[in-house]
Image 1: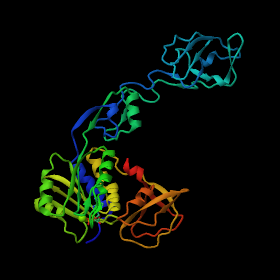
Image 2: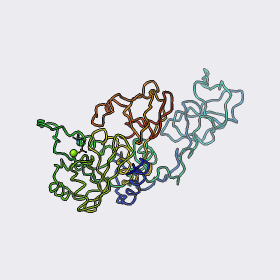
Image 3: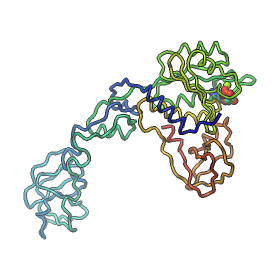
Image 4: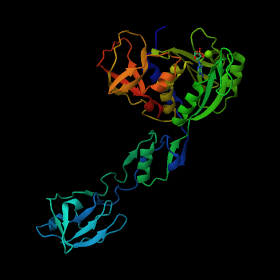
Length: 398
Ligand code: AMP
Ligand code: MG
């Protein structure tokens, strides 16, 4: 069976996500909207700035009044005040953000002026019409679409909405994701480790990551390697948008999740041209979409980061789901031509990317060391100095 290229897997997952896109929306206060996805565009009901104002502390004047003579100061305007019209042949003391008085068209910053003993102001530099004036509506006009539907709301987007006076925003509801860890060997941290057992690390990786993506996490516990228990635990899940499991997809393993899906749902097994992270399960149980990630922690990281993350964001209405990818200079040579795309845990050092020596799919520690994942494309070699793609982990986790 030929390997499924990453782009093709992503395209399929996104098509599935679009078909199951979450439609319900809710109105949330601005302060609670961080990380949510806009369900309706934000259209400005006002001009920004609402009135022309000064960009500097200085003096507002009508440029045509400026001959050789210094100008007397006829008023003082602070931010938050409403000025009187400017008296001809005078200037106004003005501060940053204060409204321009009618009749004034230019501001000179105070550093370029001299206040004479009689209080008049001499302008020391040639001035251009409109200098240091922020015109009404030059940032945003009433009716402008400022934030598109499908945009994720971060601190900056919330600030933009606030600047337009929005107190609430219409967002899609969060995706409810049930996490299942499969494997008889798994033990939760805090409990003693028996023979042959390991601690469950995937669970906390996924639960904290999902929360960062704006999902609601339902912890469905550890699934023992047992078909009846698998069926029973899956059957108990209610009101869920996605069942996300780890483990139990390696070739040759007793794959009980897969078996349960085959018997009572739908199952597709993908063999991805991806390393780490070759096997991926896609299916449904009782109509609920299921994604089964490989269990090795680095494989879980890469398959979630490059595939399941995008799928979930798209389910929640996010249009732009591709992580920002940087072009960086390789600080390493790669001579082995592979048939899978590799993502190596790597660091940026002085603008060059260096992979860690230990890329074992069971090793999570080197991912904690890494700044991101460097891409080694299938069928390609890399020479030191080549440009390569690098995806910061901070980008994937945001
Ligand atoms: P599996 O796909 O179930 O064969 O798992 C592959 C490897 O990942 C095995 O060595 C498992 O012990 C390990 N593994 C599976 N699930 C987890 C988990 N939740 N936390 C840490 N390691 C895991
Ligand atoms: Mg297992």
